[in-house]
Length: 82
Image (cartoon, rainbow, N blue to C red; front, side):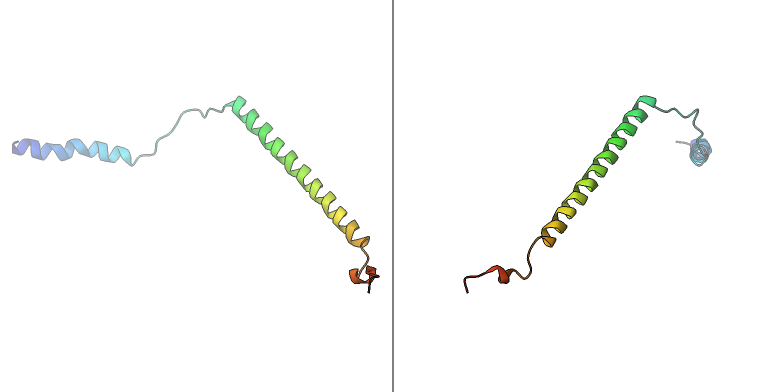
């Protein structure tokens, strides 16, 4: 290659290097309404399932509380075989 080519290559590469540093502006944002609706329905289903699970835990805790209240304490007093 000659001196001409070795001196012009950096000048040709300069616009490419400078173009990378500029921000890129996109066009109009696009949204997928069907996907959004499906995601919202799935999220609402997950919330409903979580609320149902919380209610089941509350019922279970109430049952445990009733068991404790209805259990005679101390248990060894029930033994009459002594």
